[in-house]
Length: 253
Image 1 (cartoon, rainbow, N blue to C red):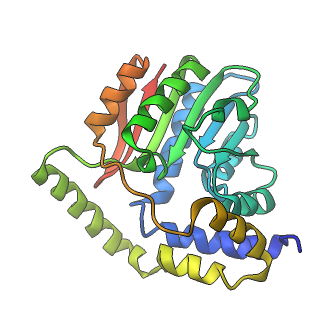
Image 2 (cartoon, rainbow, N blue to C red; image 1 turned 60 degrees about the horizontal axis):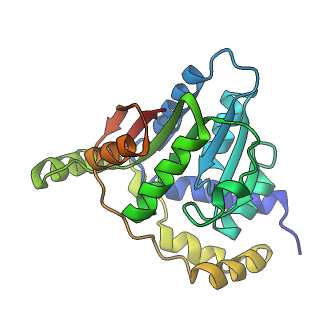
């Protein structure tokens, strides 16, 4: 049984609400990422953008709406989230089933020309530091000179007190916006397990990933990411937006 548009829409909308628990000012963060890509690709006929860890297409869809001339490629290793993206946001991007940082993942993108931008949101914190180091170097090789890597993620401040203070500010913001009222990660996945139309991709996900457990956070700070990006060959690295420990970091090739 295939996945219907109505069912995909229902689960993507629930995903959007659920994710607001984990990203402070999530919609504004999406907007800032699109602002950066818009600026960097101004005047280009067909910008090429890859969305790293695209999930069900949340960022890819917003980029496609904002930059209709862009060619967007979404890459993720989760077969269930990719199925939602391919159904609900089918026109926003070309979706690729690959594991970021694994052997052959860049070849699976089938780019054909240099990237103008690589973007990601709430995904790269899942990569262990050695894998992230390698991934940054690979992305630097794929981007054109002047292209950008734009990462919106949980990027803690270095040091116990600055880190705790930034996290506190983020929590207070989330409380004012009542983002904690939405269902959490575990509840969303438990509900998905009862959806007949998602049984097949959920089973495949179980075979590959072993379940819906939250990834291990690499704990890297803004300063850590900046150092890794410079080592990978990025000329400049600048945070362009931050609220609490939710940050948009831009690396310029």
